[in-house]
Length: 161
Image 1 (cartoon, rainbow, N blue to C red):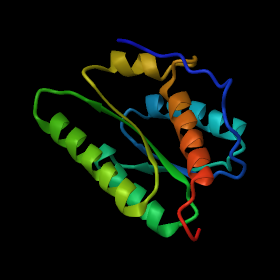
Image 2 (image 1 turned 90 degrees about the horizontal axis):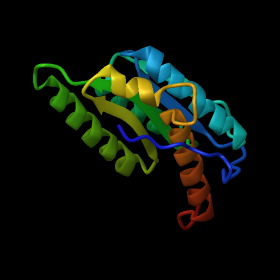
Image 3 (image 1 turned 30 degrees about the vertical axis):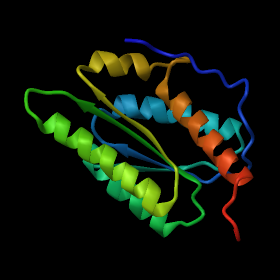
Image 4 (image 1 turned 135 degrees about the vertical axis):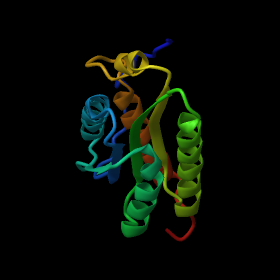
Protein backbone atom coordinates (compact mmCIF):
# COMPACT_ATOMS: atom_id res chain seq x y z
CA UNK A 1 0.00 0.00 0.00
CA UNK A 2 2.52 2.61 -1.18
CA UNK A 3 1.47 6.15 -0.44
CA UNK A 4 2.91 9.49 -1.39
CA UNK A 5 3.03 12.66 0.67
CA UNK A 6 2.04 15.78 -1.23
CA UNK A 7 3.66 19.17 -0.67
CA UNK A 8 2.26 22.53 -1.74
CA UNK A 9 5.61 24.28 -1.67
CA UNK A 10 5.83 24.65 -5.45
CA UNK A 11 2.15 25.34 -6.15
CA UNK A 12 1.57 27.67 -9.12
CA UNK A 13 -0.91 30.53 -9.04
CA UNK A 14 -3.81 30.23 -11.45
CA UNK A 15 -5.97 33.19 -10.57
CA UNK A 16 -9.65 32.64 -11.29
CA UNK A 17 -9.01 29.05 -12.41
CA UNK A 18 -12.33 27.47 -13.37
CA UNK A 19 -12.85 23.87 -12.32
CA UNK A 20 -15.73 21.54 -11.57
CA UNK A 21 -15.79 18.44 -9.39
CA UNK A 22 -17.88 15.34 -10.03
CA UNK A 23 -18.22 12.64 -7.38
CA UNK A 24 -20.07 9.37 -7.06
CA UNK A 25 -22.55 9.03 -4.20
CA UNK A 26 -21.01 5.66 -3.26
CA UNK A 27 -18.59 5.81 -0.29
CA UNK A 28 -19.18 9.55 0.06
CA UNK A 29 -17.34 9.82 3.38
CA UNK A 30 -14.09 9.07 1.53
CA UNK A 31 -14.83 11.07 -1.61
CA UNK A 32 -15.95 14.04 0.47
CA UNK A 33 -12.70 13.93 2.46
CA UNK A 34 -10.73 14.05 -0.79
CA UNK A 35 -12.90 16.88 -2.15
CA UNK A 36 -12.22 18.97 0.98
CA UNK A 37 -8.45 18.67 0.48
CA UNK A 38 -8.76 19.30 -3.25
CA UNK A 39 -10.75 22.49 -2.70
CA UNK A 40 -8.12 23.71 -0.21
CA UNK A 41 -5.41 23.31 -2.84
CA UNK A 42 -7.48 25.03 -5.52
CA UNK A 43 -8.17 27.94 -3.17
CA UNK A 44 -4.47 28.23 -2.29
CA UNK A 45 -3.69 28.53 -6.01
CA UNK A 46 -6.26 31.30 -6.54
CA UNK A 47 -8.92 29.22 -8.30
CA UNK A 48 -12.61 30.01 -8.08
CA UNK A 49 -14.63 27.75 -5.78
CA UNK A 50 -15.65 24.73 -7.88
CA UNK A 51 -19.19 23.44 -8.07
CA UNK A 52 -19.45 19.88 -6.78
CA UNK A 53 -21.78 17.60 -8.72
CA UNK A 54 -22.92 14.30 -7.19
CA UNK A 55 -23.95 11.49 -9.53
CA UNK A 56 -25.41 8.05 -8.74
CA UNK A 57 -22.22 6.06 -9.30
CA UNK A 58 -18.79 6.07 -10.89
CA UNK A 59 -20.21 4.83 -14.19
CA UNK A 60 -22.15 8.10 -14.55
CA UNK A 61 -19.12 10.32 -13.96
CA UNK A 62 -17.94 10.44 -17.61
CA UNK A 63 -21.41 11.49 -18.78
CA UNK A 64 -21.58 14.25 -16.16
CA UNK A 65 -18.07 15.42 -17.04
CA UNK A 66 -18.97 15.63 -20.71
CA UNK A 67 -22.15 17.55 -19.99
CA UNK A 68 -20.25 20.04 -17.80
CA UNK A 69 -17.57 20.53 -20.47
CA UNK A 70 -20.19 21.10 -23.16
CA UNK A 71 -22.28 23.46 -21.00
CA UNK A 72 -19.40 25.65 -19.81
CA UNK A 73 -16.62 26.31 -22.33
CA UNK A 74 -14.77 28.40 -19.73
CA UNK A 75 -14.08 25.39 -17.51
CA UNK A 76 -10.35 24.72 -17.40
CA UNK A 77 -10.39 21.29 -15.71
CA UNK A 78 -12.80 18.73 -14.32
CA UNK A 79 -11.81 16.72 -11.27
CA UNK A 80 -13.54 13.40 -10.63
CA UNK A 81 -13.66 11.30 -7.46
CA UNK A 82 -15.08 7.85 -6.98
CA UNK A 83 -14.36 4.58 -5.27
CA UNK A 84 -14.97 1.23 -6.94
CA UNK A 85 -14.65 -1.71 -4.56
CA UNK A 86 -13.95 -5.16 -5.99
CA UNK A 87 -16.64 -7.68 -5.21
CA UNK A 88 -17.28 -11.30 -6.13
CA UNK A 89 -18.46 -10.60 -9.69
CA UNK A 90 -17.03 -9.02 -12.84
CA UNK A 91 -19.08 -5.87 -12.28
CA UNK A 92 -16.01 -4.20 -10.76
CA UNK A 93 -14.00 -4.70 -13.95
CA UNK A 94 -16.82 -3.52 -16.17
CA UNK A 95 -17.40 -0.32 -14.20
CA UNK A 96 -13.68 0.42 -13.87
CA UNK A 97 -12.98 -0.10 -17.58
CA UNK A 98 -16.02 1.82 -18.83
CA UNK A 99 -15.23 4.70 -16.48
CA UNK A 100 -11.66 5.02 -17.63
CA UNK A 101 -12.43 4.76 -21.34
CA UNK A 102 -15.34 7.20 -20.96
CA UNK A 103 -13.17 9.78 -19.22
CA UNK A 104 -10.51 9.41 -21.90
CA UNK A 105 -13.08 10.11 -24.63
CA UNK A 106 -14.44 13.17 -22.82
CA UNK A 107 -10.97 14.58 -22.25
CA UNK A 108 -9.95 14.32 -25.90
CA UNK A 109 -13.31 15.09 -27.54
CA UNK A 110 -13.95 18.15 -25.37
CA UNK A 111 -10.28 19.21 -25.05
CA UNK A 112 -10.52 19.56 -21.29
CA UNK A 113 -8.25 18.01 -18.67
CA UNK A 114 -9.95 15.37 -16.56
CA UNK A 115 -8.16 14.83 -13.27
CA UNK A 116 -9.08 11.26 -12.43
CA UNK A 117 -9.29 10.13 -8.83
CA UNK A 118 -11.70 7.28 -9.41
CA UNK A 119 -9.90 4.70 -7.34
CA UNK A 120 -10.52 0.97 -7.82
CA UNK A 121 -9.65 -0.95 -4.65
CA UNK A 122 -9.82 -4.47 -3.29
CA UNK A 123 -11.10 -3.26 0.07
CA UNK A 124 -12.04 -0.06 1.84
CA UNK A 125 -8.81 -0.25 3.86
CA UNK A 126 -6.94 1.00 0.80
CA UNK A 127 -9.16 4.04 0.36
CA UNK A 128 -9.15 4.93 4.05
CA UNK A 129 -5.38 5.41 3.79
CA UNK A 130 -5.82 7.76 0.82
CA UNK A 131 -8.67 9.87 2.17
CA UNK A 132 -7.31 10.72 5.62
CA UNK A 133 -6.84 14.17 7.09
CA UNK A 134 -3.13 14.24 6.26
CA UNK A 135 -0.64 15.00 3.47
CA UNK A 136 -1.30 11.65 1.75
CA UNK A 137 -4.90 12.51 0.85
CA UNK A 138 -5.48 11.99 -2.88
CA UNK A 139 -7.51 15.21 -3.01
CA UNK A 140 -4.24 17.11 -2.60
CA UNK A 141 -2.77 15.28 -5.58
CA UNK A 142 -5.89 16.00 -7.64
CA UNK A 143 -5.86 19.69 -6.76
CA UNK A 144 -2.17 20.00 -7.59
CA UNK A 145 -2.63 18.21 -10.91
CA UNK A 146 -5.52 20.52 -11.84
CA UNK A 147 -3.49 23.62 -10.99
CA UNK A 148 -0.45 22.36 -12.90
CA UNK A 149 -2.38 21.53 -16.08
CA UNK A 150 -4.34 24.80 -15.97
CA UNK A 151 -1.06 26.70 -15.60
CA UNK A 152 0.52 24.72 -18.46
CA UNK A 153 -2.45 25.24 -20.77
CA UNK A 154 -2.49 28.98 -20.05
CA UNK A 155 1.20 29.14 -20.98
CA UNK A 156 0.62 27.01 -24.12
CA UNK A 157 -2.63 28.23 -25.69
CA UNK A 158 -3.91 26.95 -28.99
CA UNK A 159 -3.39 29.35 -31.91
CA UNK A 160 -6.14 31.94 -32.16
CA UNK A 161 -7.24 31.66 -28.53
